[in-house]
Length: 92
Image (cartoon, rainbow, N blue to C red; front, top):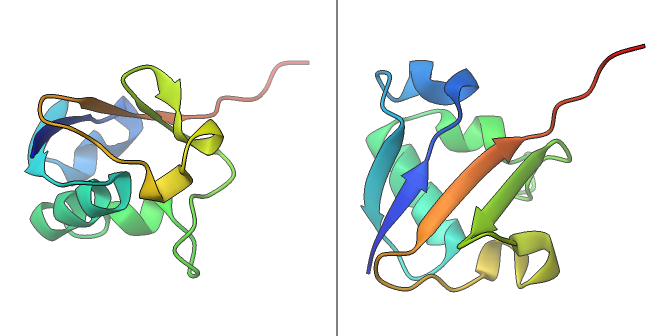
């Protein structure tokens, strides 16, 4: 199934500036693997050595946080949008 992965600005240096990438996948994990195949190194910025999402990375499928679904095993369907949203912290 073709899904669109939205790329945050902080990672666009790995995607030649592209804001979104279309990949074929049935799960979020497959979508990230396909994204990494097309743009090597991006999955390493999102996932730790065990293959789990890093704490500061949030991923949404159709506006639903995958942490409350099936995490990386969350199914995606044709035309879904997968959004990668890095957590932002700071301030005083």
